[in-house]
Amino acid sequence: MASPEEMAASMIANMPEKTGKSLDAWLSIAKDSKLEKHGQVVKLLKTEHGMTHGFANLVAHHALKSDQPVDLVSAQYAGGKAGLKPLHDALIKIALGFGKDVEIAPKKTCVSLRRNKQFAVITPATKTRIDLGINLKGHQGTARMVAEKPKSMCTHKIGLTALDEIDGELTDWLYAAYDMA
Image 1 (tube, rainbow, N blue to C red):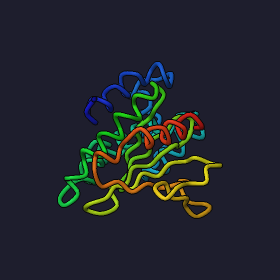
Image 2 (image 1 turned 90 degrees about the horizontal axis):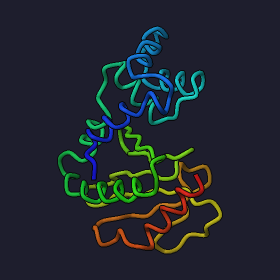
Image 3 (image 1 turned 120 degrees about the horizontal axis):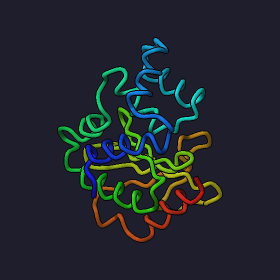
């Protein structure tokens, strides 16, 4: 499995092909905008330039010299949550296996998994549990995959505390969410 650093490097290498411009060209656009907030830069790149969220997030981090996405993930699993990192890594590996169009978009408290739109969110919720939110509209849910309240970021949530809980059933749900995105 690629490390977060390798994933970021791959995104930068693929940026000209996927977005039509190099990282330096996008950094110039972001700098010329004179925007100072991360969300503003991401919004500009997405709305005015048609950039996907993952690439816009990466450019904004570089343009504002804020934490790199890999630092965001490291911070999520620092201290008491360090034992959850293997669960995170296993989920990322599965998602990346779905296709080359999977985007990993780290945020301060979670990691969004995107295709054309978000299909899942990995959140280290407590020191002993990761919450995997998935978007599976139309699925009733189960005792394990709990339906969320309307207007939640994801339609369902699965609490994970051990690697053996990442099984075929969970992978099927995650793939179905990816397929719908």
